[in-house]
Image (cartoon, rainbow, N blue to C red):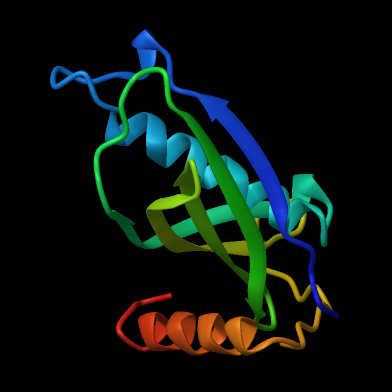
Length: 142
């Protein structure tokens, strides 16, 4: 399966800003996880997905109030119980932040359970993202 890219837009408002008048990292992380969750929930039941780790969420430059940011998310790798999402945040076509999130598929009691999802990279970018997340996973506990 080649998963779709999911797009979410956000207007950066005053309540989203930190003391430097730029987008607060905590709000960015909230939106980042939400964008990744949307990608994971497109492949598995939302009530069966939990976020277990953010990998390498990296900012390229500050985001100012009034900017509209676009999150692009997709699942790039599937393990037996895990789904690994890549998320990019752009503003006016410029990459502002990117990283990966690991979600785990769980049963009603919260134990990891196989999801049966297979991800097949089609484009070079898909393969490159899969390799990047696999490198991050080698240095991670998850």
